[in-house]
Length: 224
Ligand code: SAH
Image (cartoon, rainbow, N blue to C red; front, side):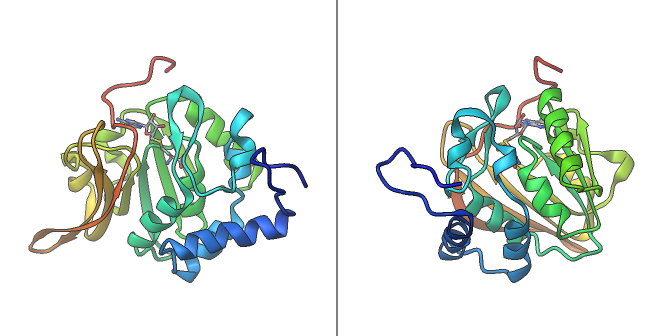
């Protein structure tokens, strides 16, 4: 597909676009070869519908249905990298959104559970997972701040909506030796990406970069 990018410049072909996409990830600190491989394998295009589809390969967050956003690819890469995934892991994601982050995870681990409070987003994400043959993802409509007790404990947990503090049930459902990555802070302020490690002795926190995510809200979305 060769088309004008609307900014006065020509966008190259698919191969060049992919190179630029991967280059942007690397230059923003996504260096893990497995993570880059998964991000090369999963096309971001199908996760973005309508007006913004042409921007799918730019390193920027974009609007999706239900007033939500698909995260910036470099942030997806950095969060995925920070999880230090191994192929046998069982992972829980809170905030399915478009399904893009879950699709990346599905290439790197054994099993992915992803929860969103908007039924419509869960349904649309499921359709994409099916079309892409990603059969190790279970997408569920619900309030993810309570986690998914019936599948706990999880090796890794990722939250892609901002809470003021890590939700207690998620800390409980994380395995000892497990890692959770999430943005914390108030929704209208700059948030911090943090990594929590659960050890025999308790929780260890380390801070990563500043980010801006939509808020983690209570209950189900209006459409659900
Ligand atoms: N990971 C997504 C982006 C998520 S945007 C992607 O790759 O596209 C954040 C999502 O979190 C939104 O879809 C929003 O509906 C969802 N969300 C907010 N609060 C939630 C909650 N309590 N439980 C589940 N999902 C929630």
